[in-house]
Image (cartoon, rainbow, N blue to C red; front, side, top):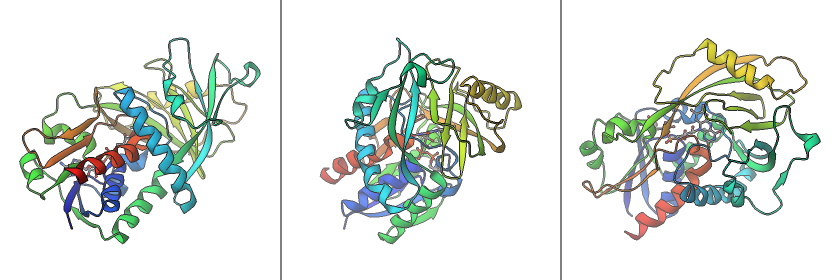
Length: 312
Ligand SMILES: Cc1cc2nc3c(=O)[nH]c(=O)nc-3n(C[C@H](O)[C@H](O)[C@H](O)COP(=O)(O)OP(=O)(O)OC[C@H]3O[C@@H](n4cnc5c(N)ncnc54)[C@H](O)[C@@H]3O)c2cc1C
């Protein structure tokens, strides 16, 4: 049986590991932080291709992932499909909605639009609640015969020596590991709040004015910020106030959100997802830099990657 080591246990590493198992590989995951301490566990996480590039590949991966989530939702693992409103303007690139199956997206009528929004779609999209879904994926990986080792890798040479085939799914950690100048953080502060009776919604039409609400089974996530190249991982109270103010502009008729937890996460942003064999360490395949859409595209990347490496 072919052996492979996946480095990283966020959504990208776990989906990659499972797709490789499905191709018959014996898989070990090595990661500095186990799945419950990764960025991936902190976020929404809704299917929406936000800040992931290039668009053409991201759309293909997102479409494959959508199909996977259709199968996942029957497993009681935190995956559901919910209506999600996305605002747009004349300048917006709406090509992502073409990835959605027929009959799952519609234009909102003027009388249905939240306040301060002029145009919006409502689409039925996957929601993968990470605190349920990541443990589920990890246990599935272990039950499939996988093993896990908690360990920090210092450099690419050490990474390449881990196995005859190594998949690098280290998210923002790849910046130091690969000396990657293109990879950088996009800081996102979000508020985990008591569940609200409002629709799930995003307005990402203007850089610097991101606003969204993801309604989950037991809580909701209200966001957020999209600060490029900002490494600050501490809570900024003025961001919290700004997030609440922007949320209020939707005009939903309900009480002020009750904050359970303020959270900061750094999106692993890159001009293009790094999805290729390393030219120097040719046994290493890189799969990192999924920006604000790791949950949206991870299954698609994992399926394509497992096809590529099983043929190589
Ligand atoms: C506020 C916010 C909201 C978001 N909302 C959404 C959303 O609604 N939908 C969506 O699709 N996406 C969303 N995202 C984006 C998504 O969270 C990321 O794209 C995704 O989590 C990246 O996953 P990953 O597995 O690549 O990285 P991570 O989850 O960061 O995992 C990286 C793994 O690599 C390991 N690692 C790193 N360096 C090393 C090293 N040197 N040695 C060993 N191990 C190492 C880490 O320990 C960890 O296990 C959001 C992001 C933020 C910040």
